[in-house]
Image (tube, rainbow, N blue to C red; front, side):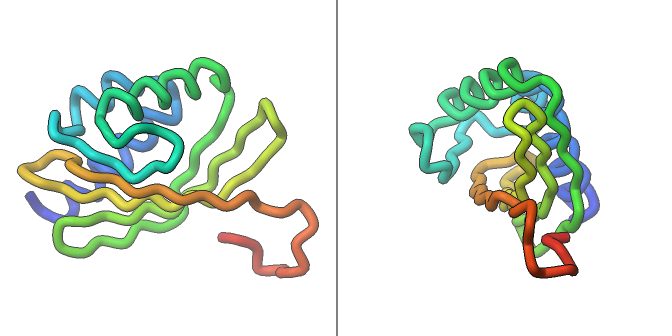
Length: 125
């Protein structure tokens, strides 16, 4: 697998999940042996998949925009802007995806709410 393909897979996977195509994204891109490090769900594939489906169902109008991608060996880091319209919240999110045999095998994710009145004029992006 080339780095370009990993980047395309990571971006497509995250965009599909954000737009409610969670199960299709998992079927297409995620290993059956997938594990993750999200503190709010058990570490197995199905638990996070169901949580992402519930999120997509409860907030169908959120937007997700990739801002930067960093690639290294078997990993791709994606820095994104998540807009949660339902709760009027913007977040900066980082996903780190580890690949094995052309599939996402492991994922880390962290997010930070973007303050509306930040003194930093450069902003989060």
